[in-house]
Length: 53
Image 1 (tube, rainbow, N blue to C red):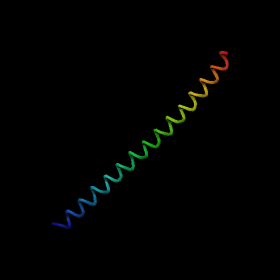
Image 2: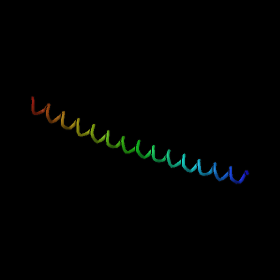
Image 3: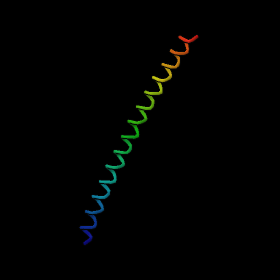
Image 4: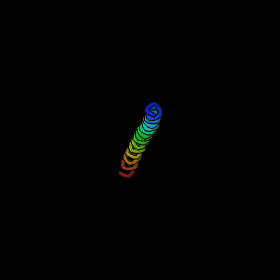
């Protein structure tokens, strides 16, 4: 009984770890994408502002 419980707990722990890792990876990816869009937006804004003036 305790052996099954240990295996089940290990499987849950492994699945939870994978989910956490995936969430962190997606969060990091989203941060990079948002940062890149922010940089592009700032550059376009500066370019448009300098052209306007």
